[in-house]
Length: 236
Image (cartoon, rainbow, N blue to C red; front, side, top):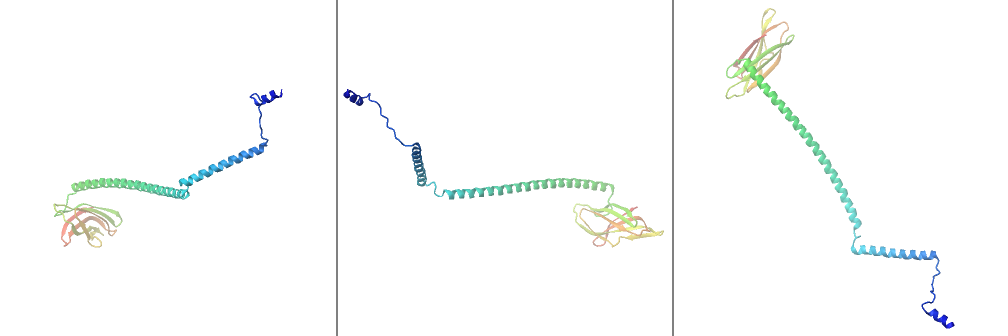
């Protein structure tokens, strides 16, 4: 009987034996934490050691600072360029506006020139020239402006194939009556200088005694030698 029991224990049908450790759970968790921490430390050391070997950390901070400075400089240059571009655009707009204004003024001046040229043609047809040698007095006009004042206007022209600049003087003389007697008054201050090549517009204000009655205005144009070239008289 004993032999059978002994042989059963040695055979496959013998009962299993479970061996258990009698460690408390807190101690087990502490051991596991230590193992994991040690593994993480080894992994971090291996990672840092690998970066040192590859040279990834050499001058990385300096390079980062340099890149930051370059980025800041590029931003400042961009802002400066944008400001210059905005200023240039404003100047370009102002220049275009000035050119448009000048073009408009030039167009108006051309229109005024054509109108004056047409008016001159009308005056030439309305008032025949008086004078010789191409020199003429046209459109002599005189109007009272108040007691003892008379405003005059005239246009002196010069025509011909080869026109030279005329340099001379002109004189106006008022004629009429004063206290019932014939009266005349030369231009105060004497003759006035006159220069022209094609035409010259002359105007001014004459003063005379308020008791006088002005009936005629006479103009004389003289050359530099004193010779009379043109004479014209208008009645008021």
